[in-house]
Image: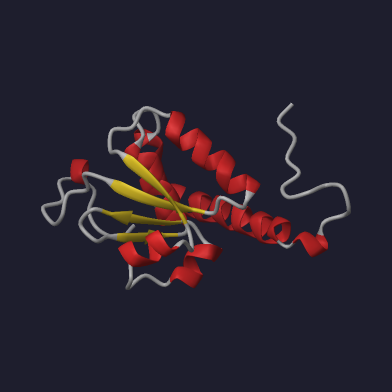
Amino acid sequence: MAGHLADRGGAAAPVRRLTVLYDPDCPLCTRVHDWLVRQRQLVPLEMLPVGTARTRARFPALDHEATLREITVIGDGGQVYAGHAAWVVCLWALAEYRPMAHRFTGPAGAPLARAAVLAATRYRARTRDLQEIPEGLGGCTTDSG
């Protein structure tokens, strides 16, 4: 994971706030967004939609095309987390999931975190292209009940 996390003793730039870039047009992303905002946060998470003029103006040096392909989180000290590191830092910010985030940074957990994010990325890529989805199914077709 890029940067040091505050409770790991990192003297660099402690993370006091995180900005999570999400795709409001992706049903999977909006479900994750809704889940994140309902959790008790030890580090505040600000949610910003990807690709907007506001997001581009706030983070002009960021590769905004890449943020459309994978989860990206920016720390208040300028840290940029992408892919599985972004997901792990989101978990780290949450009270109930911080211990899990620490496990995902270790040698046994990191491959699992990478695999989970890769699977979500592939799923999202398939469901974002409405041309490939059978008529009537819309975007993501996960069924929660």
